[in-house]
Picture (cartoon, rainbow, N blue to C red):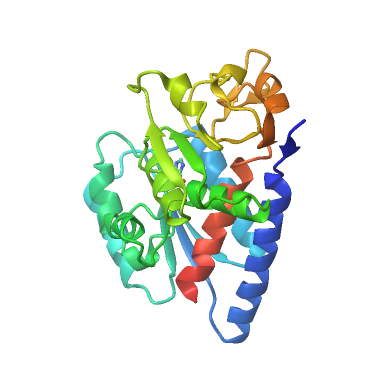
Length: 278
Ligand code: GUN
């Protein structure tokens, strides 16, 4: 049976490290501050934003919450970001996505000062990752690298297959694995012979967004499988993109859902906030 990669324990470890660094910064007179902006009241966003504020409070990061009405104009949102960019007492700025349809998401993300872009979504930070320079990295893929490293799973020289090519997960994931000297293939919805490709993977990262799509016949014996998906099944129970019961007996290590990748995203956001003030 596969070893379970415990995202809850590893994220707790990272949060403790952040807490210590925040306390040290406080002694030096620096109060780490994150501004969190939510436009409208998408229920999922409200839960995510609430969890981010809770994590900040636990670690000792000051959070400034901006809960703006759905009708907020793009100009108003850009003006707020401009003001926060200029404030010396604000280290990190996070705009919760998705935004209402009348607001141009790309324009908003481009307006955040890259030095405060703790989500790692600004083109300057994405470009920095691409050419191996320092910068903020998108939290979910950065968290997956931590899961692998802290579980003593070697990446260098391994066949890594990423399924999914989103800007937030798939693309930065591929770049991070490459930075760790993995041999990387990115598969996606238009990939032919997906099984042929996934069966080559020593490390398989699944971010497709389809519940339980990856069954044992997609996975090489002894592979490491990381499941980024999160869905509710027919019994209202959480499940991932990977059919855990079918796949786990064939893996050397696998992340569960819940308790795998999920908790790592906020832990890495906290890490990025600490970095933004250091
Ligand atoms: N919406 C879903 N995931 C994220 C995330 O990681 N950051 C932001 N800002 N919005 C999101």
